[in-house]
Length: 462
Ligand code: NAP
Image (tube, rainbow, N blue to C red):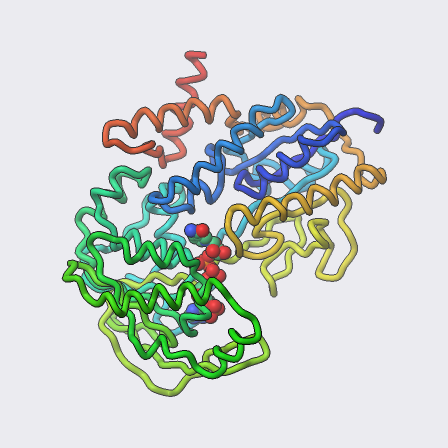
């Protein structure tokens, strides 16, 4: 193979995809990277997941912009791997393919009534307020007063915060115009935030917990009894000190001491509480909650039902119990863990099976839906290093059609209008300009057809 560039396709333009590209393009050995995304826009969850009121987290895209500026990098937005290009197509055109498609679906609660009207996944709501094209037409009835968010991870915190925020503050963020309009009309006043285990086991991080207390329109209610540490938790904290948990307990204690400040909305945190069923005719009207106690178990401190039940009127439910990856056509999948089976980033034919030559995986589809954006940097580096080892050892299969033009030609022949980086830059400039009217960093275009129309208009002017 000599020093001819090795051609790598990365599928998914979120943080895992970009960090993998960055690592490969930094090497002495020449690589070319084609980054594919099914949307015309890049950045995955940085655009479609990170909360609009967290602009600092989004500023990571500047790093990705620098990666995209490398002449050995090409973006192919609006291209769905598995439909517009099959796994076999990719193998025919590239020395290596890196799957970095994230986790698109959700875990389920598996309780009766989960699919009643008014019960949604938190991730649908997140994708809606962030303007993901597949979710822009969802409707959330915010004319009701009581909402419940199930789960106490950072997604639950984002959803709770957006529901409880002052819309005038959100107006200065890149939240989509339609979501802002709906939130301005919102009559949601009480938001239950339900953790099945105790506060020391909560998955949220301390800055996100503190933010709840900084909301101008919301009181935070914590039951003092929830902060009494049980023996199992005490033993665990003594054996393995957990600074984040200690900080969270202190913050929660602060909420108890602060008491009610007479703010119009109320966030009620309840720990050791599991929803047992949702009840109502066609929509959710009540949630039956079960009390739990904590016990040491094989997988750490576990929630065990006490048998006590309580019925609480609830109009809207957001299930925020984690994402779940979906299988890709032509790529191995481990349904038990909902990941592509892999050994440190090398795709395996099955869990514990043989290596699939030239096939790699990075991000949530590799390790499961955990960690923050920065977690993807070492994760991607680990994958890229395996690819580099295989390249050095001559283990990458030679593609049948290795020319740079072959893929764009194939896409054109299939009638796919692939979006390049300059196209995205034109759309980006359009969004930024549209945001200025309301003092926002951007007003996102949320309809794929409209995105492509803006892009085609900009191409004609170039
Ligand atoms: P997560 O952190 O895994 O939290 C999931 C929550 O759901 C946990 O509290 C979990 O409780 C609970 N849960 C799971 N199954 C349940 C069930 N059957 N009944 C009741 N509760 C259940 O997931 P996430 O909130 O979706 O976040 C995904 C990742 O993105 C995380 O790593 C998160 O930190 C990250 N993220 C970060 C930010 C940020 O940095 N600001 C924002 C959003 C997301 P148990 O612990 O008891 O299982």
